[in-house]
Structures are given as C-alpha cells and as structure tokens.
Length: 129
Image (cartoon, rainbow, N blue to C red; front, side):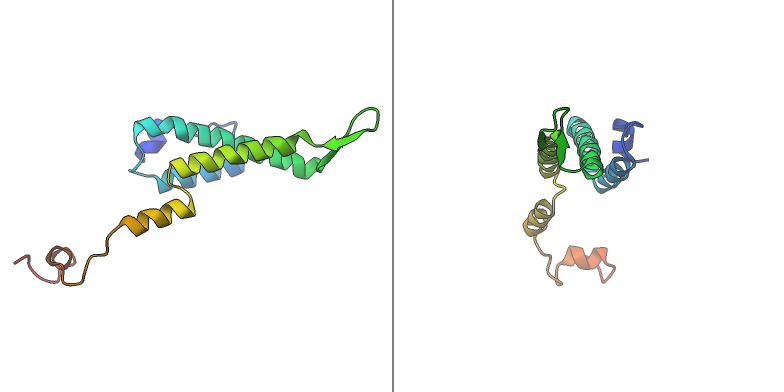
C-alpha cells in the first residue's frame, strides 16, 4: 500500500468517476507526495467530485432552467461546473499533474550521455573505473 493511500482515504460518498480519478492520482504521486500535500489532495478530491456531480446534473437537466412563472435562465450548475473545474485545474498544477507540468519536469531533467561511467555501471555495461 502506498504512502498516499495511508495518509488520505477516498471518501465513500464520492462518485465513481472521482474514485477512479483519485486512484490514478494517488498512483501517479506514489512516493513523491509529502504529508503536507494531503490537504491539497483532499481539496482536489472534493473539487473533482463536485465538478462531476454538477456536470452530471447539467447534462441530465440541460443548460436552461425554467422557474414557476416560466422565466428561463441559465442552469446554476453552469457556474458551479466552471468554478469547480477552475479549482481542480489549480490543484492539478500545484501537484504537477498537468501535461504542461510533466513536460516542464522532463525538460529540467538533464540527459545522461552514453559514455557516462555511472550510467554504464548501473546498466551492467562495465565497471566504474
């Protein structure tokens, strides 16, 4: 069991999509998240769950609602969906879970040349000397 799974539990009240998403997030961060990241992971879980639930309601009921007098207006779930998505995107950036963040990390990782003695030793291609 990974360290993250012990420090944060996926709330049983979360929708199935959120549970799957958080499982992937925790696997992706396995061994890299610190205890101080658990608050951000919990906020990510709650925000993503709320995003899923608001967007499901929006898909089910449509983008326009009608009041008792027949006046039409945008569905309140539209603003909820946008708000929660913004929060999710922010937490994902903070945790390095976006495509851009992963590309940035790769660009900061220097390439190791093929004649590097340590690389060759670790690959079993010879000795260090």
